[in-house]
Length: 362
Image (tube, rainbow, N blue to C red; front, side):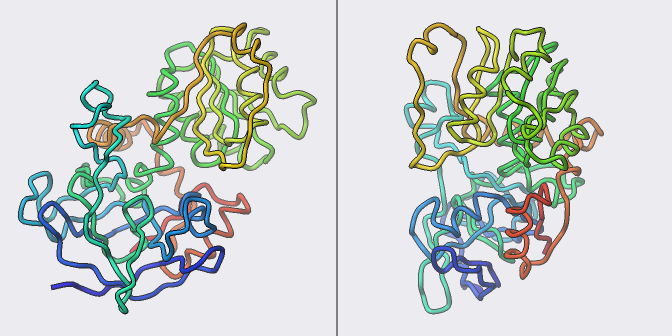
């Protein structure tokens, strides 16, 4: 039988979120009901609320989640009842052209639950990134569940479900940061700081954090930055990066903001054969205008990083294990723990830049 739980929805564009009863159907053949233990408050959830993703309201928000598998469908083989899992929004299909070419991190046909969760009046909900985890329980495809070591704090583990993985992967997977590399990261929120932590893990020798907020730069240093640039205190960010890299520019520059201005800074702040990684998400109205000859004369690589080019089944357990070994301080991203009824207030703190992550704990 279906069950009714409490969940946080965005009913219309820009309106405050609401905590309301939602209906979870029994899982279909390859679906799973997960009891949520914790879920991070991500900028993407705010973008859903404000209409920055699409207009398929009402949305069931939340997607950076960890929890326990409660019920499984008749054909589920990937997980069992009682498994401790982190939810992911890249449940690869294994059959599309990207998967068949050996690039499943670019899968074009990822799995989601086929059934819809609803309001009590039957109104269908659109779950954020196919997950919808600001709720006591949620319904997902079995492939969206990645088993990890149950010893890890769910408030920490859930962050791998989106923002922290996006940043870590931008450095390690997309940017291919290696030992001795110089790395610059523009934008030191959760994703940018995760990129800094990833660059440190990969063995970068120079890690430059760039932001306009002194508090964020302090967080960046705590997570591995060797140098900081406050963009409000220098005449030219690009020249400031070059001064810290023997005049050449960084081997890898990661734009965790996603604006034309910051992408240009990333482009010109890299070494001639360096790599630019765009992991900050631009809005559809943003346009980039640059001389074409500059692309030709600089060489190197220009990359976009989707979800940190991760494979959840490979990466989530690895990073959880590194954290439990004391080698990856994921717990430093958890600024505060809040309840389901405090999501709107958490959005305000995130917008003000006073937290790295608020985490809803159930």
